[in-house]
Image (tube, rainbow, N blue to C red; front, side, top):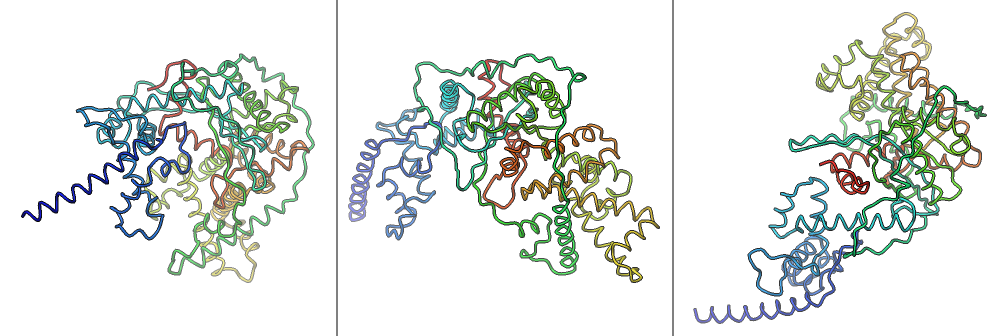
Length: 582
């Protein structure tokens, strides 16, 4: 027993010496101070090396074979929690943490949890566990970030987020945002307007990073007021009857892109017909997106840079707000990429009024000075909705239910495209099934005719066959339209739209029937000096993957994050000195 006591005493002295040495290093080490962002190596740099070494030895044993184990995330997490809770004196019942020892992890946890949940109770629970900062500290940091943003806007004399770069192409998007809170404690909602900015860096032109004001941890006075030129929406009187539509010279398309795209769609349908009878593995690309992604070259350019500007309380479809949004996009474009023609993406109601603004004030917003375009996401939703009108009462939804593709409620929602991704998948299954049935019928009763003549003969004899064959043609054309965005094929986009626009007239979708031809006219008569630049930047890449997306898909992603987290509403609408939704 005496030997055990002596051994324990000796080990305790060794541990005490190690702890003393590490504590001295911790108190001498320059701590991490939040500066509005988390630099790439902030976790590694904020922790003394001997503390990381000790944690690594505890986790992985004393014989460290690689330096990577010292900087593993498990080691960094444990070390940051120790650093965050280290005190010079014995802790009291309710002690505060030191701002000099506030590593990135507790700060990130507090800010992220508040952004996702807006829950004071949850943040307090995390703080009580001593793994995150307190709620008061979270609010303090968010106010400092807002102050830093507003100071940057005042310094630049323009509302333009600091991570946007100079010297690369710019595009804007304007849309309404409806944030209906679903919690039982919600007291209000937010219905207003949002503007997003997208930039397109290239492999050989990454853009010029702008000078950013230093982050002030203890400003003398908080500035949370946006410039009046941004906040104030001037009144506008717009007469829709007196506008004069200018003549434009449109270039003709030869339809070759559409022919090649149709051949590729037929190739996917042939592959589906071959693979379905076999046992499928992960190596098979039977899905529509997987098949075309396999054939598409990788995206060489870096992902797009996106930013969401402070929100407005004004309605998005008001002429005053639309014109103000066009002024903002025009100003930001001139600030970031001087000489470029501004581009704005929007949905149908905003597009219609924006065109009247262009026709009413041609000297400021003329079609040779400003490009207004339809959002691809809205066009796709309208196309599926139009096709749903054609399929109504045809038995299509009943077939999907009986085949186990979807439940009754979900199948009915496909007619109105209320869930875009599910609707797209349902139509991909439909076109594949109908094509397989057509091929089987052709094999059984072709009478020596080729496939095209056989389909024409069957369509003349059977109205039912003609109906479903028309469904196949429309679905194939819509999928080509979607693929034009993913492949950044501008010519294919125009040719597919020209082929589809007539169906809006046929099914009395008069808004899109009226304004899509105007959009096609605009895209076919772009200013000569801007055509090449626009064609290379009319869609954006969100990652280094093969697929690219239309502008308002990225714009809607920004709004989706707002509606889930609510955090930009907290930061940005407070800058207008109005009541913030809770």
